[in-house]
Amino acid sequence: MIEYTQLFWTASIMRLIALFLGAFIVYLAYRGYRRNASKPLLYVALGFALITAGTLLEGLMFVILGSDILAAIAIEGLLTVTGFVAIIYSIYAVK
Image (cartoon, rainbow, N blue to C red; front, side):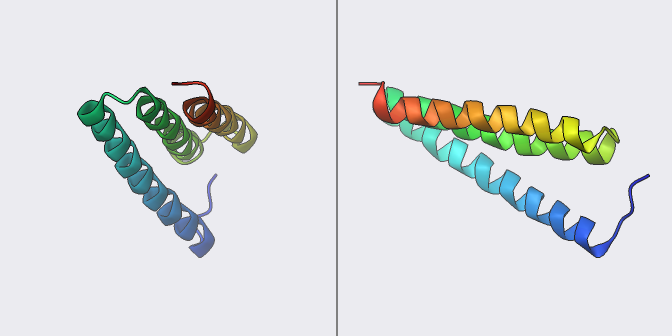
C-alpha cells in the first residue's frame, strides 16, 4: 500500500512538472524539425520524448498500477538511456 506523505506529493508534483517541461521541449524540437527540415532536431525530439515517456511510465507504474518500484525504475532507466542515445546520435551522426 502506498503511503501518501508530503514527500510522496512533492515527488509527484516534480514528476508532473518534468512531464510538462519535457513535452514542451519535444514540441519545440519537433516544430523546429518541421520548419527547417533538420534531421538532428527530429532525433532531439525523439530523445526527449523517450525521456519524458520514461518519467510518465515510471509514475504510472508506481502510483496507479502499484507495481514494484524496481521494475518501474528499470523501465524508466531503459527509456532514459535510449533517449540520451537518440540525442547523442543527433549531435554526432546526423549530417
